[in-house]
Image (tube, rainbow, N blue to C red; front, side, top):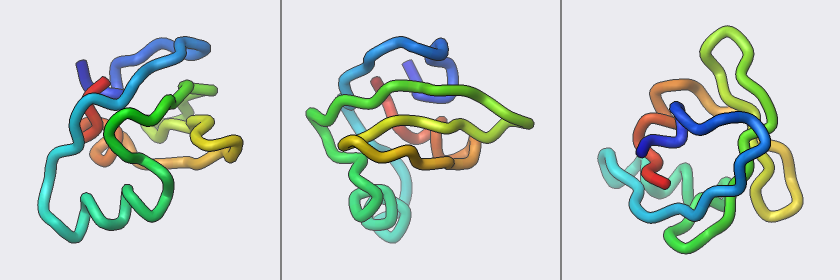
Length: 69
């Protein structure tokens, strides 16, 4: 399921990251790697705020849709 559909407070394991190579590289620099743990904090106006590697990161709904958990 895409990260964009995950409920707030759920702990999820990243299984796959889709998209072009530049998008994958950008997500990787933010800490989104296969096998990583991500928790959705909240969703505001379609954007998703997540906890990943002890940091809070805001990503767009389009980016969150490319991250499979």
